Each structure stands twice: as C-alpha cells, then as structure tokens.
Image (cartoon, rainbow, N blue to C red):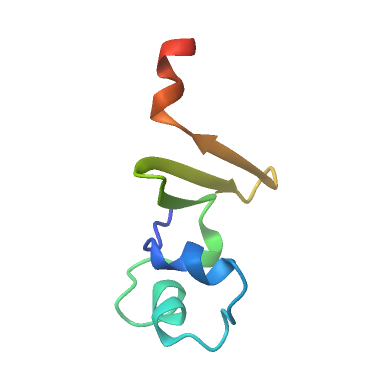
Length: 75
C-alpha cells in the first residue's frame, strides 16, 4: 500500500503531475523503502467540504473505491 499526501489530489484537478517535484518525490526516491510500482493499492486521503474521505485505487482490479465515514450510519 502507498499513501501519497493530500496535495496530489489538487494536482490531479488539472495541473501537470510530471513536472511537480513534490509529487515526483511521493513516488520515487531513495527515501522510499519499498517499490511503489509493486503496491496493490494507492490511498488518497482528502478533505472535501471539511469532511475526510479516502479514495483507494486498487491497481490489481483497476477500480477506485471511496471510503466515506459519514456513510457508516447507512450500513
């Protein structure tokens, strides 16, 4: 599993990902002690309208899941 920081989601909204040093450091570099490309899931925590969500990209199944704590009461 890999957890990039929240600023990545802002960049996904239309800015260049490949040119951003802060994004590149989240996926490559000597500070990472594991191979990010071999991770099964990548987690993207985000705050939307003052609420936390977590988007999970399951690379094996090629699907995105959304974890929304506010929906726990509906289960």
